[in-house]
Image 1 (cartoon, helix red, strand yellow):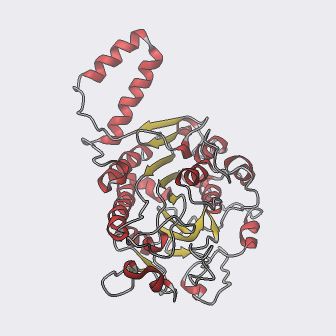
Image 2: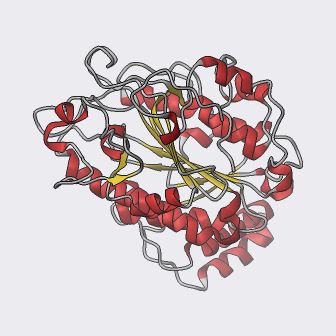
Image 3: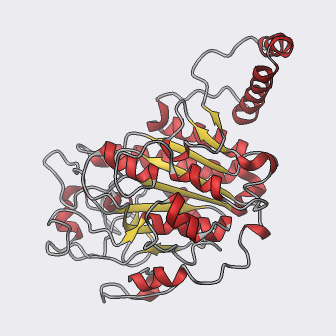
Length: 409
């Protein structure tokens, strides 16, 4: 990965820096790495954090001279009451994310800071459309970029072959990011009392004689449930609840770990809109996300070494704190990368600064890294995806946004 620093605020030796369009454009024409998907059995998981995660609370820029005055009572430091987990001499990590910090130290997790999609307004609905559809503007809800990625992967890549051609959607409704023409397997944690143990067998026998197609689908659904659940899984509180996040991750990981299971999956965790009392709410939510990362590591088993999990949100939040100890809709935020295939132990950033004249419109952390560059970089290096298809089909009209380099170990 290129190391380019345009600002003396932090020594480049302390953190990896993606800076300038040249580093991105050059990667579009660079040779593909020899350890792409042909030499591994890759898994790619996208977790959508709906509601706009405050990147400056999740990964506080403690070393920025303007940080503490902007954040007031919700500011973190490397000591004191609100103590962050130190990542280097500049960035900290929210203390609720101890598992992620452990993965970071093991070089299996990384953070992309001051990042955003192409969207620059502040509507949750439109922001989520852009994040999940992969288009530069809202209103495109027929399919998501992860589904189109699956549909365009080369055959025999380890992902687009035989029974592994399907994606995996976790939750009662498939997230937009994985909806589309490529087939998707769906699973959601049980919220109802389990049926009698003999009922599935009776139904299978009934439909085997009257509707063979439905019988096959029923059998597949029963088997999926057995693999994913294992235990009596109930998503108490749903995807915005820490327990629900971990249970959804458990089901996803168990299905992805199967030799003939899906290789690409999407989950959506709700509730990240922290307009008020942010510290308490985000501690709970980030703890749930952290637990989900730990569950994936445990349940994936040997497949963890070939796995990348990308956690993304529609936009960030204001640099200033509002009158209810929360933050309002903003721009720049963070992305989390975790998995045994991640070249981790780094905060990837071209830090824009937090002085008033450096904030976007005087209020937001400015975005210097495009989410699409990171997603494309993972797709090229992990899945052997075509940069041309990524720019034209997966993220339509994004040819100028080249895949980021050096994300995969």
